[in-house]
Amino acid sequence: MATNSIIDITKLSPKFQDLYAKAKDFVENECIPAERIFALQMGKGEDRWKVIPPVMEELKAKARSIGLWNLFLGLEYGSFGAGLTNVEYGLLAELSGRSRLAPESWNCSAPDTGNMEVFAKYGTPAQQEKWLKPLLDGKIRSAFAMTEPAVASSDATNIETNIRREGNEYVVNGRKWWISGAGDPRCAVYLVMGKSDPDNTNRHKQQSLVIVPADAPGVTVVRPMQVFGYDDAPEGHCEMIFKDVRVPIENMILGEGRGFEVIQGRLGPGRIHHCMRCIGMAERGLDLMLARVTDPTRRTFGKNLAEHGTVIADIATSRIEIDQSRFLVLNAAKKIDEAKAKGAMKEISMAKISAPNMLLRVLDRAMQAYGAAGISQDTPLAQFYAGARTLRYADGPDEVHRNQLGKVELRRATDIANRLKAQKDKSDALISKL
Image 1: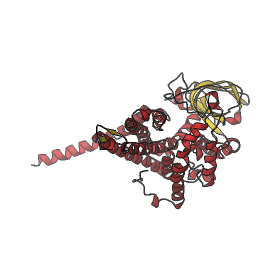
Image 2: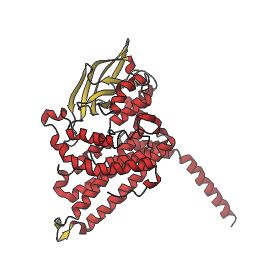
Image 3: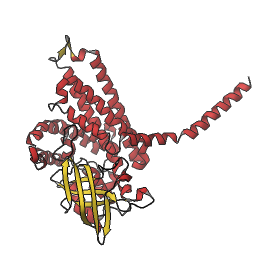
């Protein structure tokens, strides 16, 4: 594992340093060795959506016993979380990205992390008691239902799911898809985004977010979606129907018309979590590539793979790109610590664009070094690649973040034009005196 060269962890809090050492050891010596066991314990056929590999519960118990639990909830959430800064958690999230099993084993996996933040930040005491506490305890899982097949969900104001109040209840009707975690038998609750006031002239006040228990009448999981053939069982990314689903009015989050406000508050730190896990996946991909190209049995045209100039260049390029993305992500995390997510939108957008694209390039080079094995189930590279490609859509597609970033930069145009004019005027004045 490469040594992080951007942040000197010895300058961070003793609490973080202790967690970092434990996390590094846990991922390398517990999670990665357990990956094959997890695959063997998976259910077959329809049982893929009913069986939770026992090794996961064993990992969760071990992680919790050494303090690797609910690390994502920062200082502002008090006793709910570990009280780390975004920079500190970012460095831990990088380590967790090296293994598919690490985030869940720490109770730090999406979509639960974002949903727990919603309950912790916006939930009523009753909502926290009923849903947040069992989520924090790892006893249940959750899903966030926003994306829809019939509209361009990259603009969340397009969603069509209807939330209608009738007396002391809300009635929910709509079709959703790519709902991560909806296939998990432990999924007990959905946060559902829909329109409660579609005629509001303010497009960002039309939406509300309601709590829907997974066992509510009218909730149907239609099918799991696949990413390049991967269904990510037992959690999955599912298509769902909400048909005349009734929930009590106390299941509204924050208030009617405030759904957009809630999801924006949910997404900022979560995007950085994804990005840091990308760095960890990329580091493992590069590690696997280095092991492959230095294997003495792997020779082509009379040379070890590592003796070919193109391979050496690929390794160097991957190292540069990983460290570039790490800088952007940690810079965004630092900005969130200083100015909250709303004050770090530019930095978050840069990181969110950079990290998944970097990961795809690094993994592509590693897969190329492995040949056919690189796209098989015998390495984690192909599954990492499928996940990385998905992240170019998740939490806002590249195009949305580029558009936002470009607009931020354009705001500087007037000041730049004025400065250039002042410089030219001064230059003209100097020349006129010659």
